[in-house]
Length: 193
Image (tube, rainbow, N blue to C red; front, side, top):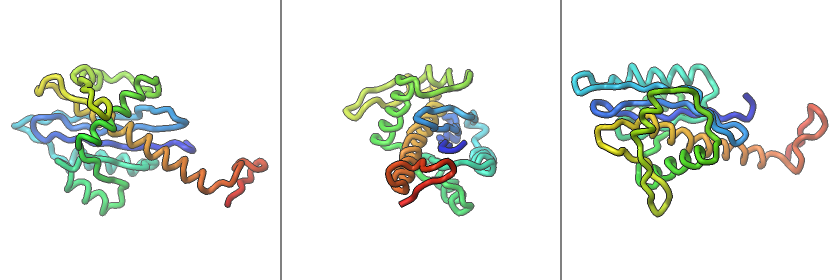
């Protein structure tokens, strides 16, 4: 829909963690979980990134409307470069202390402010219950309560929420830069600088 910003975020575990792709929309300051996919690799059956995450990201991009895709490059560097060459709007979002705190805080603020709509998803609920918030000097950061607990879907959700808010801000800033004063004009007419 007009003015809506859709983004995808991927967090990948190849053997011991899960892998997840989350799609979020930001529209009029409200966030909506549109879709998610979680893969559960094992040491005996590691994740085939090309035929899972990459294929899913390509399919979502083919459907249209994706403003940005973000991924942690740790496990997905090859995928990022491959998908960039294929024309997908994908970029790195490394999980540094600063970025992890920023996207965790964005998710915390969205939930606390009741600005995130979600559908019933037992797998995401389970991962949310596995997550803890660790207070840092910069805000809240997601962490696992126990190493064996999986939170990759929630990490990807936080990455998507943060990116959707950023991208929506860029969209709003671009519209404001184009318009002079009141952009509405007469019905069907828009005034530009």
